[in-house]
Image (cartoon, rainbow, N blue to C red; front, top):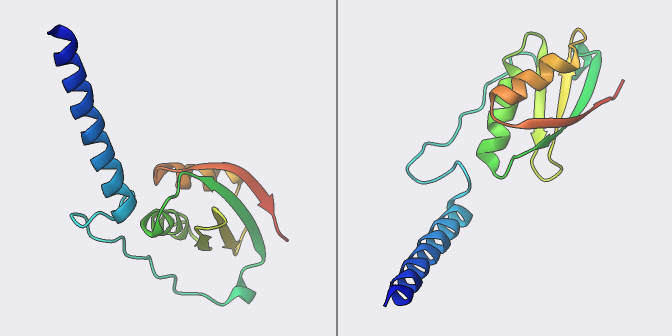
Length: 123
């Protein structure tokens, strides 16, 4: 009798887990229908000739468009920074008017909930 109860509990736990996972696949990690989509921060100066420094950040943990928007917003809040995020490549292209140290960029991304595992200078 105890074995049957344990089996029923395990089956219920598996069903709940599968349903939760399927819902996450349909709606994205942070784009569920109950949450509004993340609005992009508008950068006033998008003229790339004004940005003399570039870095590429390889970022772990992004799974949907809202994740990419959160990372871009976190970086675009930094002074003199214009960042775009490519979700498929799991990277952010960061254009800077003045050099910004790697730790500042990593902290901004970490504050958004993601991890930078590699920083590459472009210029």
